[in-house]
Each structure stands twice: as structure tokens, then as C-alpha cells.
Amino acid sequence: MLSFCKALLDLLLPSFCLACEKPLGPAPELLFCPACLERLHFMESPLCPCCGRIYLKAAGGDHHCGPCLATPTHFTRARAFFLYEEPMKEVVHRFKYQGKTACLPTFTRFAKNLLRQPHLAEVAGADWIIPVPLHQKRLRERGFNQALLLARAFFPKDRRVAHDLLIRSRQTEPQTSFNGAARRTNLKNAFTVEKPQRLAGKKILLVDDVFTTGTTVNECARVLKKAGAAEVMVLTLARVKEDY
Ligand SMILES: [Zn+2]
Ligand SMILES: [Zn+2]
Image (tube, rainbow, N blue to C red; front, side, top):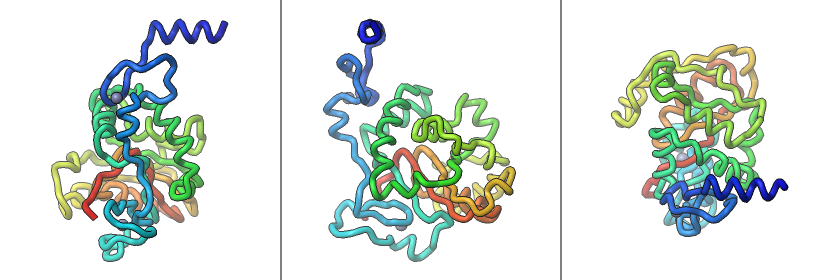
């Protein structure tokens, strides 16, 4: 009976590829067609153990990158599931700017498998999982915080996901409008820790959609560490590619 209902549902609510919108067969496990699935670029070694930058051209093991050696970050490790390239770029765009949340169950499935990998296992052991917060005004405009939805998708029904420990106390311009030092200035006093006693001595995992330059998560990490967190790690759905 149950399988009959499911078959009926599949017929009534056909699934489409999240990237190219091609119709998929009945009850797909992941909402990607074989061609788009093949093009997904998973993050893998060799990478920088700190910022998670991947060395596309290099062979050999993980090693720190120049920028991380020159300026240590406030977070200990940043990891991502995918490289921010097509077709994931399109999926993120539809999710973030068009509110298409059909991708979330697929992300849950990916996270379940990927978080077992050696370079990602450490981030799964955090005491608190904190989405990068949006300012109230941006939240009202968008209707949802994409980082919170991702944190819940990566760690379903996990009581460590907390959206009230770090808040965005000041509205900032989108980081995409700035470069380098201006990105850091734009974020000055943007984040405030709430209930610091709950963070004291804890291992925090920050979750966001895309790791671009890392300025935002680094500022969150600085504020969390200042409030007493023992360690801050970062997990994003995707990470931009740098020519390294
Ligand atoms: Zn496709
Ligand atoms: Zn690095």
C-alpha cells in the first residue's frame, strides 16, 4: 500500500534535476540527472588544512597555503562539500535568491555520506553548530536565512544547531561589493554573541552557503573566540576556486 502511495505521488509530483531542470525518473535519491551529477566537483585533498583551499594542479598531501601562513585565521579549519562551480553555482543561486528549497533533502543525503570522510569528520564533532546570521532586515526581505536552512539540512534534527548564540547586530552591505580590507571594515561590529556562557570552552562549527574570501566567517570566528569559544571551525556547501 505504502509503495503504491509513493508511486502515485511520484506520478503526481514528478522530480526535476536541481541544476538543468530535466525531469528525473521515479523516486530519485538525489535530485540531479546523471550528467549534472557527473559534473559536480567534490572538495578533496590536496587542500590547505586551514582555509580548505584546494590545490587543483598540485599532487601530494595537504599543506598550508601562503595566505594562511602569512595571516593565521581565527578559525582552525574551513571545509566545504563542493567547489563553487557549475552546476552547483546554479543550484545555490536558485536556493538563495529564488527561495527554491527543493535542494535541501538532496544536501542532507550528500552530507550524510560526506561528513564521514576523513577531511570532514572533524567538523562534525562540534559542540554547537551556528549558522552565519543575517540581519533582521535582510531576513525579512529574503524570508529565510539560507545558512540556517543548510545547517539543518546538513545536521537534521540535531539539537546542536543554534541560531540564537550569534546575531548580526548591524546591517552591512553585501560583501560582494568590496575587496580586501574594505570587506573587513564593512563587517566591523557586525556580529554580537548572545549567551556567552553557553559558548565558553566549546568547539563551534559555523555554517554558511559559500566560502568566498572567508572574511565573514573569520570575523564571526574572531567574535566567538573573544567571547570564550575554544575553537571555531567552518563548513560551507561550496567554496570558490582559486588558481593555486
Ligand atoms: Zn541535470
Ligand atoms: Zn589556507
